[in-house]
Image (cartoon, rainbow, N blue to C red; front, side, top):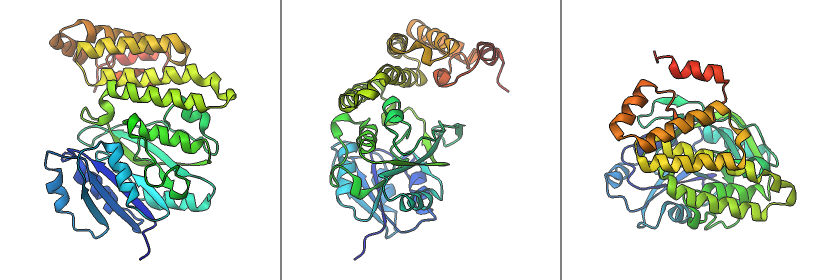
Length: 340
């Protein structure tokens, strides 16, 4: 029997709130030659009941026990065939032509290990939040990936199976939830990468996502960062400080976005010090000042007082300020202009 060209692995745990939408975005793909392997990681909600209703013959459901998302992704990959592999998080969504366009891109570039697209963000309810980054780098992307996970989410790329470092267990569970960034870095060290300048993925920004656990992400991401720079050639070592500043920026935003919590505020202050120590000029001064104010408020104020202040000046407490380059004057105007 000939394997489908694309094998999709969806490792899920307690995904009842978003799983049906994620599945629908797969089953509606314009490219139909795929198999979807869903690996449940010991769910205790209605996830298995939802999966039991799926009747599409291209879908396989595996309940292999709770060993972690990365380990179960490896279990799913080990069962797959076909030329290409895609990963999907239970709370992300794909555009209808995602697989069609990415398969065509890898077929046109047989030397490349993966193709990635652009990612926009939606909220917990699926409403559009804001556009994601628009990287255009392709070919040798090592410098860009060392500085930041430009692919944003594991749901983004399509991978060429023959390029994986291990076709049965390419992901390292010891660095979960940063195991995807680790794999992209290892692939980019050996192979070119293709960029499709199109939005094909909607990343759900929610408090229950694994990536929202900023302390877990901190431990994993710094391990990935250290290993990557140990392997990197000398010409890339000059990027280390900027890479650390970007990593601290990401963690600071994670810490602040799901408050209020004094512990989160203190962590945000620690991450902010990391930015200032390594590459303060990488962020606009007004964004650093805005983040300092919101971090101090979260660390020092009681929860109700913080929520009142944040609702009165929502833009001042926007955790994404560090991602948004603006002039100081326009930043002040945005902070103090009421939302319509």
